[in-house]
Length: 164
Image (cartoon, rainbow, N blue to C red; front, side):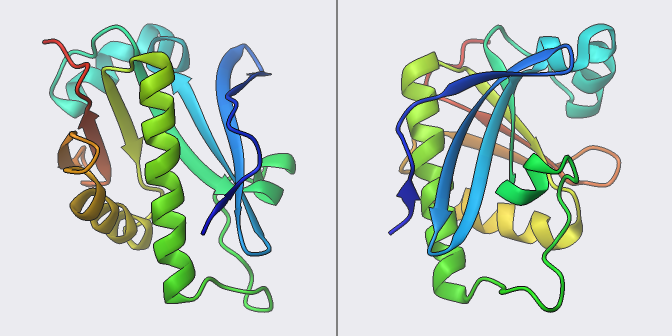
């Protein structure tokens, strides 16, 4: 089972951006999941991001990302583990997916988020996102649009709170 360190969304500042995070671990691998309001994240360029996604973002839309805790702390985002570091086994990847699903459900229930966007950093991560969407969208009562953007790495997740 994933270990959620505390079922609490911690608000934090990252430069001018205010976001929420929650920490969790899979065995001895520590992760962080971050939710940032897209209006604040993209500011004046939000129109470009909406065009890329082919939709207008409703109020309460968040961009979500997860990363290894050490990458986040060192501001060295989305760097994969080195060859000498432990990699996740298949069963651990499944538990990582379950943790992300549980955290997303928790965030939805506490914020009434209408829409989440996610952009995979690379094709390998896109494959992982696709598996997550296939397995977890229906139990979460969400609708997922995939292959968004110029490189097809984007996802839009409409929640039960979504109002067009």
